[in-house]
Image 1 (cartoon, rainbow, N blue to C red):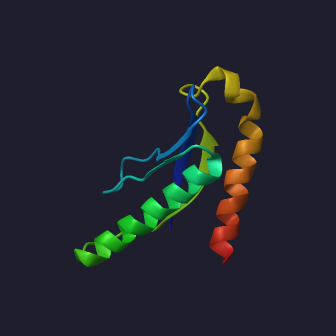
Image 2 (tube, rainbow, N blue to C red):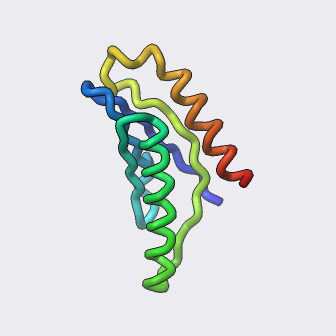
Length: 100
């Protein structure tokens, strides 16, 4: 299974965005939300919808494993201090979902 980095951003209005930082795949995944949990849910939902779409059109889908990183450069500097806690939460939630 291919490993992919998913970047977490936090904008000036406090909302979150998550995107894949890998352009070698034939698809991309995005998620957003007013909280990190909402953004992660949207991100995972987008991944599952993409997988389903590829199945419907009979196209090969590359399964990936995510590692989350915080995008310090594009995130609002006022939120960067909480980045370690956000990353811990995102990676812990992902490990839990993989185990279920």
